Amino acid sequence: MAAISKSQRNAQIIAIVFACPLIALCVLLFFRHSSLNHAAADPAVYAAQSSPILAAQIGLPMEPGWRIRGGVTAMGGNGNAHLEIPLTGSHGQGTLIEWAQQSNKSWRVCTLTFQQEGGGDTILVDRSNTNCAPDERPF
Image (tube, rainbow, N blue to C red; front, top):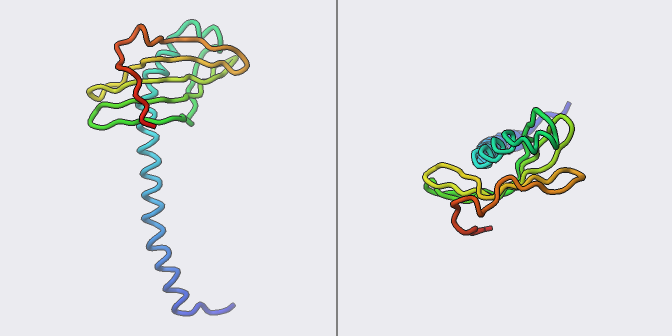
């Protein structure tokens, strides 16, 4: 077995010293992003789980998937979210398409549509029935 030189050992130590904080930062940013998405998605998931129309379409219990796609822009307790939330029931699945606004740290659903896999769209919340400001997509 070949001996590791002092310079190789020092290079490995330096790599570990720089890699560990970088990995920790990536994990922290992932969980922060994930928690923002889930906070904005919670009212939409509740609305879907409370819908007898969706219960008939995909069955109970309805469970959201862990991979929420889209973006959340929030600062100072105000913001916008445009999300795609996977939803699975006992006999079907699909995607919730949500546009939500945050005001004073509270999220409200502005539009919510369910796109059933292999089927049509079901509108659960229409913008005309909400008090949401005009949609301003920063991304």
